[in-house]
Image (cartoon, rainbow, N blue to C red):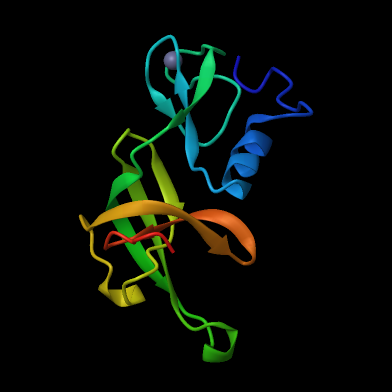
Amino acid sequence: MENSSNEITNQGPMQVYEDNLAKGEFRIQQCKDCGQHVFYPRQLCHYCGSSNLKWAAISGRGTVYSTSVVRRKPERGGDYNVALIDLEEGPRMMSRVMDVEPEEVTIGMVVSAHVGMIDKTPAVVFYNKEQGDN
Ligand SMILES: [Zn+2]
């Protein structure tokens, strides 16, 4: 059954997600039928199959589930962290912890989401410490 429907639309969920990021808003989908939060952006709830998804503002709080260091030459920006973050609402997402040395990010570290830039593209990044308005 899965993948049998055509997932391509003019205004697909990924486009909405990216448009929200461009406005500085981190929203993920929430299923109106079963209440689960859903990420990555998609047409159907992967818990119950409903297409009744809305865009919800979330707390942005999360914890580091796993972490690794990607090596990069200093002239290209130096090493950086790649982490899997468990959002308070449930979904797990890949991102970066920005304000901690890459190898000092630890599993279980409490982090909070912000809309930042990765490779000149709006993206969700995480900080260990609360950031004021920047
Ligand atoms: Zn659902």
